[in-house]
Length: 405
Ligand SMILES: Nc1ncnc2c1ncn2[C@@H]1O[C@H](COP(=O)(O)OP(=O)(O)OP(=O)(O)O)[C@@H](O)[C@H]1O
Image (tube, rainbow, N blue to C red; front, side, top):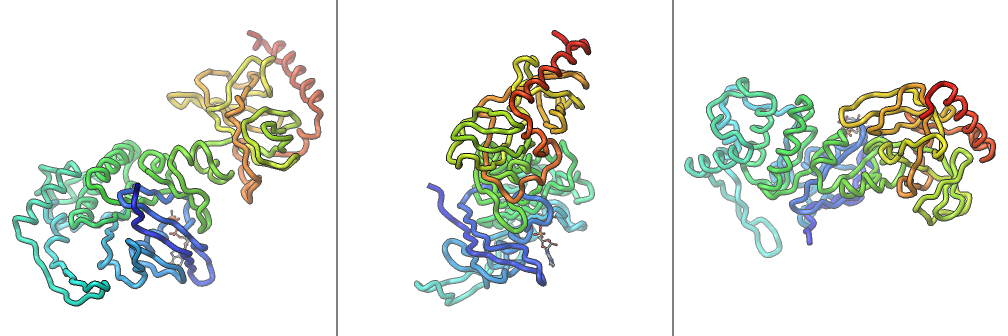
């Protein structure tokens, strides 16, 4: 079983009167790759800085291995940081940049049985040991052979690897990474995501990573912490977060979603747009208003007469592996991802299997997302029969327009 290494307990942080972190509780396991993910300004960097010791919370405890470290300065924590701007020493070559931290005398503490420091002494590593450790680290970040290059003769990705090697060479227990790939182009960023995960597994320490890029978080993390407005919205594995988002905010932020206002008829039956749809979720009250989340890839395009809903394609974008199609259901816009190509203007039927519906308790986020779906009472006011009539009428129209199979 994984061992807990860091715990944030009831952390509250405010700048002037603005509350930035609100009673944050989180534990991070040893050797875990944990990502803090959320929109700009949600408090990710502040959380990271509190763990690193660069910011002191207004209240709450930071525990490391069970010991409160609120008052321990950054350089005494076994935690290093890699920033987006990697600030290498321009006049030093790669070897010297990485060796820099090892050349600083290290303070070794002796403690008594109560953990009280009874003596401190400065220890310097031998040149041989520095040589071995730097070369081992350069090998880990795939930079062997670049020892004598100066930073300005390296690509952005290579410079970032030097920064990572420099942060790892003195063997911290935790590495904090604040959007470290933000300055790299897309292709390099994707390569570095895989590389970073490999490095983390190789060195076997905890990585705490900050990003607003959900794909980056899904690719690398063991655990993702989704944050918004200084609060944790959900903690889980990438699979949990993607497949079982806890609320409409998480569903919208991770991947793409259609979020529709619905009403639970009873367990396993949800009503939206005046129609009833079988689903797998239960545990709601009868007639309870809910958020219905449907992933774009869970929607099948079918012939109009087999569709649970019938709509008109308003835009088609080719995305390489699939098409992104926006379908208009009389004013309600949905995003569908499909390999089928339907032209703009086509009338199509859509079908969603019961496991494609994710039913969530109404949250403060309802109605925030106008992108692909919006709600009005108008459609609900139509009886099922009226709605069907309308769709059958649309089917005729479609045939007249020449889209018949
Ligand atoms: N030193 C500071 N003084 C005043 N306000 C601050 C300070 N540091 C952060 N904040 C505010 O705290 C909030 C959270 O900032 P933080 O940098 O933690 O967010 P973030 O999620 O990391 O955002 P981003 O992805 O944009 O870096 C923001 O509203 C920010 O303006």
